[in-house]
Length: 128
Image 1 (cartoon, rainbow, N blue to C red):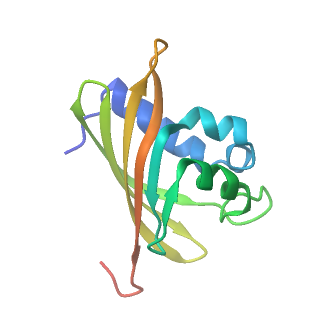
Image 2 (image 1 turned 135 degrees about the vertical axis):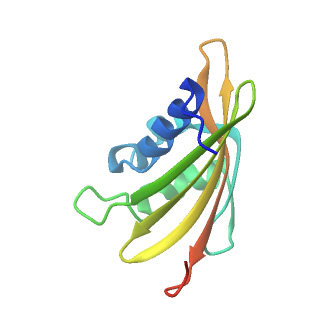
Image 3 (image 1 turned 90 degrees about the horizontal axis):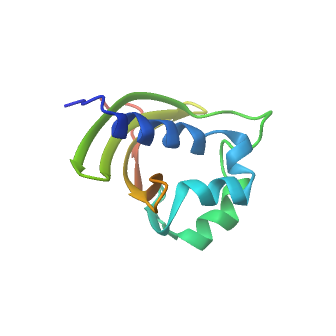
């Protein structure tokens, strides 16, 4: 179910910004988008904390402006509760597909949206 609310659009915009090489290469820009309680379970199965992700992001796939970029598709979003959005989508990078899920929550007096949780699951080459 895709409810294109302002909240869902804000979460999708944040997700797309996190795929931007300029954001991936800048700790201060990435900090704006990641919740201090952020956790990720990556496609490799590794668990990432906020600090680990901020430190590694500039070296991760999709961070080089001249390199391959994530190609996102099939965004679906649901407002789970006031200030909490669940997104699902797919990405392709270098021919590798992943299904992704993230939780975004609105924080602070200014209502900033930040990613609280992210999970990536690789899709096998014959996966549907």
